[in-house]
Length: 336
Ligand code: G3H
Ligand code: 13P
Ligand code: ZN
Image 1 (tube, rainbow, N blue to C red):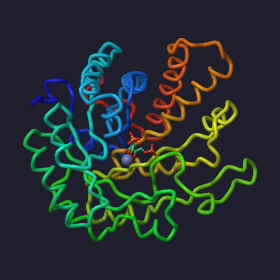
Image 2 (cartoon, rainbow, N blue to C red; image 1 turned 180 degrees about the vertical axis):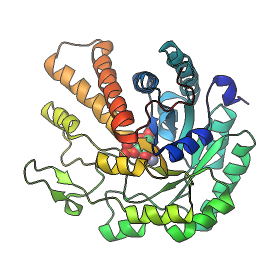
Image 3 (cartoon, rainbow, N blue to C red; image 1 turned 180 degrees about the horizontal axis):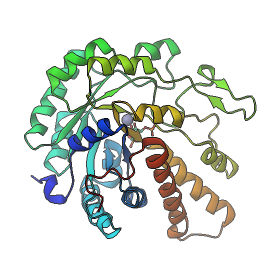
C-alpha cells in the first residue's frame, strides 16, 4: 500500500472547494509520456496552478502503471525545481471501469480515481460507484462518478440529447454513492471529431464547422439540485484549428475535426464545473509539431529534435488553457 500523501500528491477535495468558490476550474490533463508530463508540469508550475494528472486505462497499458506513478512522483520534485515550492498535483485514474482497477490505483499511490459506470443501468452504476467510494475513502482518495453518456460521433442528434445527464437523478446518485464529484453529459464528447458535419453549421468565411452549443440549461438544473457540488466535464478539447491546419498541410488527414468552443468552457469554468478534461488538444499539438519537423527536415532522426518542439507547443497550449480558458493561474493555496 502506497500512501499518496507520502509522495507529495494531493486529492481533489480542497482544490475543488476553492475552484467553486473562486469561479475557475482545475485542468485535468491526460499524460502517456515524458514530454506531455514535462509540458504539463512546466505550464502549471510557472503559472502556479493546481493540476490533475490523468492516467487512462490505455495510458496504463501503453506506458506501464508503475512507471507512470513514479513519473508523477518525480513531477512533484520537478515542480519544486521550477520554483513552485508548494505544488498541488493530483494523480487521477481516468475512466476506471472496474472496482479492481480502481482499487489497484488506490493501493498504488493514486490520489483520486474515476469509476465510470455511466454505460451501466442506473442501479448497477450506483452499486459499483458506492463500492469504489467505500474503498477509496478509507485512504482519503477522492472519487469521481459519472451520470449520463457522452455523445459519440455515431449518435443521432436525438439520441445524443437523450444521453444528457438527467437532473432528476443527481441527488439520489450523489447521496447513495458518496462520490466527491460528478461527471455529467451536456453535449461534450471525446476525441477530435465531437460532432458530425450535419449537427453543425459552417462559418461562411473559413468553412470551419461551428458546433451546437453546450446544454447550459441542463447544467443549471443540475447545479440547482446540487448547490456547490463539484461538477466535471469530460471531452472538453477545443480542437484548435491552427493545429488541424498544420497537420493537414504536412501530410495529415483530419477533415472536419471540431471541438468545444473555448468561450463555452470559460463560461462553464465560472460555475460549479471545477474539473475540465483535456487530452485530444495535447495530441493535436504534439502531432502538429512533429509533422512540421518531418516535413521541413526530412533528414532528422533524433527524437529530441521533434519531441522537443512537440513539448514546447504542448507547454504553450497548456498555459493558454490555464490562463484563458480555466482561469486557474495563481490559485495555489500557497503561492510562495
Ligand atoms: O477520455 C479518454 C481520454 O482521452 C483517454 O484516452 O483511452 O485513448 O488513453 P485513451
Ligand atoms: P478530449 O478528447 O475532448 O480531450 O477529452 C478528454 C477526456 O475527457 C479525458 O477523460
Ligand atoms: Zn473522459
